[in-house]
Each structure stands twice: as C-alpha cells, then as structure tokens.
Length: 108
Image 1 (cartoon, helix red, strand yellow):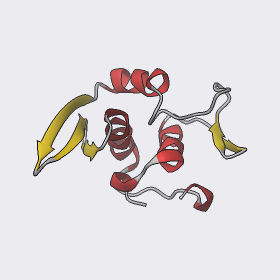
Image 2 (cartoon, one colour):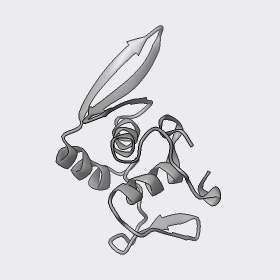
Image 3 (cartoon, one colour):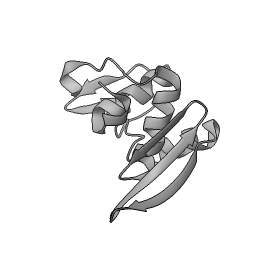
Image 4 (cartoon, one colour):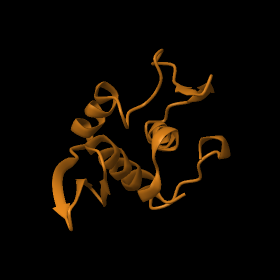
C-alpha cells in the first residue's frame, strides 16, 4: 500500500512497525502492550504527539483550489492529509519504511 494512502488502522499499524511495537487486532481495535484503549496515533494526540515531537516533524496548513489540507515534513519525507496527525504519521512512516508498506489484509 502506498504510504500516502494509509489511513485508520492500516496507518496505525505502520506506525507501530516504525516504533518496533507488536500490535494485535482485538475486537476490531489495534492494541499494544502499552495501550488498553487502543493504539491509534493517527487520531490520538496523546500517542501521536510525542512521536511528532521526538521526530521533529513540522506541521503546516495549506489551501489550494478551495481544498484545505495539512502538510507534515520530516527527515526524508513529506506528506499531505486532511488532518495534522494523519499527515504527521504518514510522514513518519514514509521516513522509516519508505513509499510503500506491506499492510496485513485484515487492516486494508
């Protein structure tokens, strides 16, 4: 799957791979050994925020042809998305795993 198209559980799974975290799909929700309310760094600032800070990802907002989107930049990657966390997590995954990621079928 293209990193620029990752969203939801597929994106959160890819972030876990970058973090060297084992994840399990339990009742439709990703879990790690550190979470009990789900692993969702692409929608939870408490999980995604520290990654943004640690990785020194830059966030910006743009409007083009009437469309509003967020841009995240980091070392070796830049991504656009509808929310800042999705943009940042795609950027992080892109910098660690590249432009394509093999995501488990059940997460696509």
